[in-house]
Length: 241
Image (cartoon, rainbow, N blue to C red; front, side, top):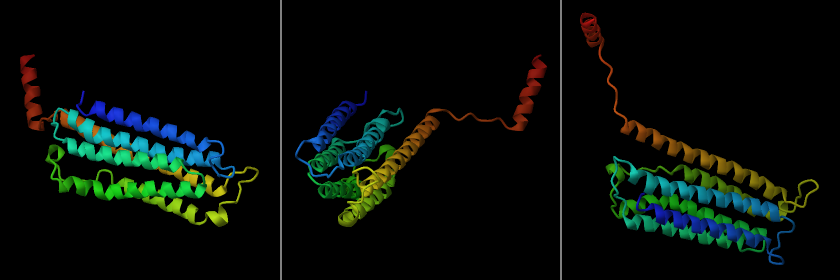
């Protein structure tokens, strides 16, 4: 087992349970003023936090487990880098809990934008912080932005949330047909679901490319004999017969 794997599992389980518990805050009697939008709010936050949990799990696996258990790699990732990512993970968890500890839709949207703003900042800060401390690269590779697709996804999600927040006073009270649910929140839920699928698709592409590269590196390349050599081998086989 990789030396980082037990710590990563414990941290991920802890924050997963913490976020699941924090979602129950939305249903506290007399502590919210969502005006009948409790279920759209719950779906919205659940989709956002699911992105956060899946992304952190795949990122930790890719950076600390996959690359340090390959027979061609060596355990060169230092404890400070792991601690740095744990610190980001803890801050994300705090913002997630704070997002659900709100009483109005406007407040929930504000804290959601705060979480997304930190996520956007992470895509800019993570690589420079790693380079600044001169940590060794796995297999001595040059710095790469493997997770740069998160910048696009987070920016789109942040901008969509900002639009709903800015138009809440005039459009937030528009109801969807016979329900008491806000049409703006339901539209945002659809956008969040699409972004979750987009994010998951990009993560799968990255992980699959890593698996393909590892398989290619571990399997020897079979050399195909030139035609002249093939003819010689066939002649030798005929003589032996």
